[in-house]
Image 1 (cartoon, rainbow, N blue to C red):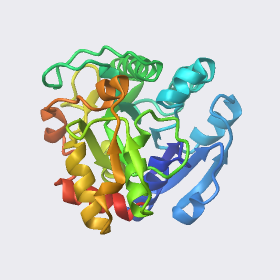
Image 2: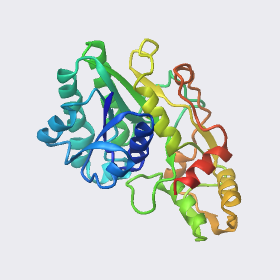
Image 3: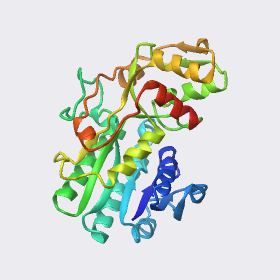
Image 4: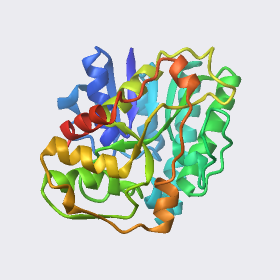
Length: 306
């Protein structure tokens, strides 16, 4: 099978390209910057912007399946709503429509997000939790979930939307993610640098290592569509982690000083990323998707990706 990965040059994209290539999949990759992807196993590269019809056409021409990661994330979407709409909605809808015309009922995996749920969250999030996005990023993800479910009902695509939790540990530097402080924590302790977190030690958040996220996205290509709900969306299982425990475990594994971490909670950040309740994901588990096994395993995997 030839699988096209969009946004392949990003944090999750690179891990996914490597994951697919290790599994013997022929990987086609597209991004505005594809440098380094051939070394990870991509066999064909398509540099360019997905807003360009010629780039989309070239990328999907020989693909048997698509995993669509390309996005303008959280805070970046709020800062540039026009760019976010063009990439997150217009280009994504066009890509899926054109691929459906070329490969009717072919697998199309969409990287959605827990941002579709908004904030504040209910006492427990489950497969039945209604969507109530507050940020443009979450609203865009919800819109694409609905669009892809419609194409699936029409028999045009075999789509599945995976709602990803926070993924660690992203590279240092600007990422456009309001939750970037969680990955910054790993980098700070790895370099013995002090860091001030915008949440309290008792804040709780849903996390997944990038390796586990890549494995879930790869698994989604062949996951049974017969057991999907009508919206074709699956909230992935994730570890619910208390930030204070995360600090302790990262410091332990890196032999770092946990005292380098201080806490200065920001009410909005705490509400959005530090009050995530217990998570129930029976559909995902039934379909074979898995979370990291423990906080120790999560941190170990994240540290290895730094």
